[in-house]
Image (cartoon, rainbow, N blue to C red):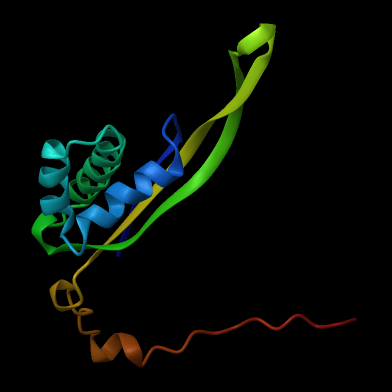
Length: 136
């Protein structure tokens, strides 16, 4: 089962967010959530919020947070705000404020997934009638 959480228009550049994602390594979502609380990067806070939201979504679906793993973490580029800074001799020095979109997808561990319930043999033997339309 996939659990998704997104945050759009984060005022942090994608490059800075990706650096924090690489810092997480191969942690579980609950370990990453705790680690990001102590990370000394400004970009860690929005990422921590999205992971916390995904864990909260899993809890609402009655899933154990300890049986979750990351399926994917996407850091995509958002729109850019064009700004300028005053330069020498009355000139304007343009720069861009970059935004990011964060998407976190969690899934349950393969061994933790419940097996499909067995179907009663009586239910399997039922044949459904299909109606055929006559072309006239």
